[in-house]
Amino acid sequence: MDFYDILREGCRDADSLSSVLGFKKFLVQEKDYTLSDLDAKGANKEADVLVGNDTNRLAKSTRYNAFIVPRNLAVDRFLVSRIKDADAVLCLPLDSITVTYGFVRARNIRMMRNLYSYARSKRVRISIASFAQSK
Image (tube, rainbow, N blue to C red; front, side, top):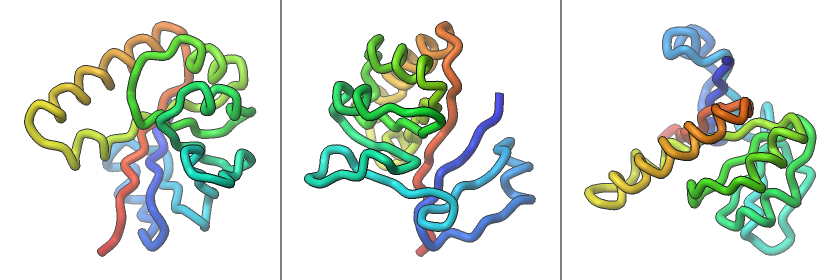
């Protein structure tokens, strides 16, 4: 399984760091990919990375080889089947864990584990999106 880490614009591509962390490559916004938040008005459904809370909208926008990032982390069987059919990549958003605390963090970890387990059982391509930013 190849892991790709999706970074925000302004981060430098560090191939040596990516290999140490086990990622095949870092993808940097506006350099390697375009990002679209489907919850916003006028979202670009042709972007490389589609982010959103609405799993129905994500499922309808899923296309070949796109990275799909469900923010709500709920196990949505329809979305997972659409990702598999489109040969897209399910990205687990690590920032939903790293920027939260207490009960919310524990809930997000549990939900991410459940989503990962279900997607893996369906043989969906899985990746990680940390959305790291340089300061």
